[in-house]
Length: 115
Image (cartoon, rainbow, N blue to C red; front, side, top):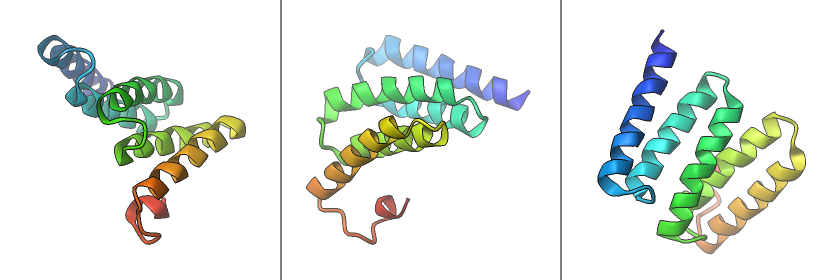
């Protein structure tokens, strides 16, 4: 009940935001990330990955390849790939995440570095 209802609401919000702001707006990316988080929480890794990738594409376009928020999404994708046993893909995402965090000079005790 609540899972499918919540997913449905997130999808509706994404559709409305795309109409209002356009497909490549950061607001759409934020809501897509929330939708992907919900998919992940309820065990739908395939939909989570697809949705995180869509959100990542928007963030790279808006924020650039080295923004911390881009690194956060890459970390999520790396973690999901690892949980599915796709260690090659996970490693690629995690190495890029580490590079982004280093570029942004995140301290070693930063919350993002501990995850």
